[in-house]
Image 1 (cartoon, helix red, strand yellow):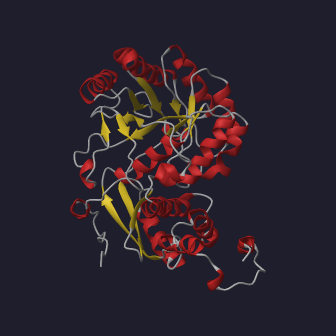
Image 2 (cartoon, rainbow, N blue to C red):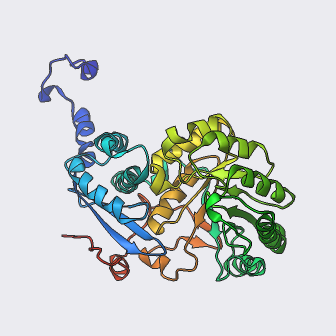
Length: 409
């Protein structure tokens, strides 16, 4: 037989025509013929209500994922489960688009719907990596680095006290080993007249500048420090604040204005030398297109379990790289979502760091069997999938009120 016929859909042949070598190639596809049998969720009561996702298969392989926090995502995920049953978990892109289409009536380009889809997408990467016996970063094109820098989101009991912030910065650098930090700037100064109008009075700006000055001077060259505004200020106030901070060594100023108007965001960014970061409230690569094309952001900060999942974050990073914009991933997740971000960070060239938000939560690392962060860095695992083993006993111990445990039967 002419084996070129094997690529011809109109060729006629029987199984007896195939050589033993060809039969081995055909049979080798068997292990990849896997079907999804169930999708389950639960909520862990962490410093946020973490929505964990598990995708089950008929091969006995289970993938772990995480959606952005909240009960709403869990309900959406459970409604999507029938759309996935019987499907091959290796078809990550096709299943992702399938779910986006199925939820189009519920606004699947943003919000809770896309965050719910993101949770499933993370679990599919874990399943696919385990089936193919490769780490998740390999599914994204390979890795640029063996470890990921983690930046610690810091808090104090008196967040408005500049000296307390400086003390905490020094403690996290000296005792915990981090060389990158973030503090909040949308904290009360005692000078507010009307916070609803988003306007910053000069005494408020001076109070925020004092926080920045004391923190950055205390850690000096030992750490980079970013400051988060949580979309709190008017355009004019953001201009004045960013300009006031230009004399300090600010890693970035995050989300100084509300996220909807990208034209105003462009103006805020281009009027200051203080680096401006946005992204956790901007969904998928389409949502980030104008921000990046118009160079309206200095650093982009997608949240993997929130804005579209691992592959969408990779697409955002690729778009950012076309404009030479680095990526610093926002992250408030459990170890599952955090490790997904680490895999993405390893697989993109323009990655700065991944946020770690739970340094004050003593049992965060108990949710998995593996160690993740040491001295402010996370080693990128070589184990298949996300490289984590979920400790189901620890999950059950920390369930949110009213949440039900996974049904492992």
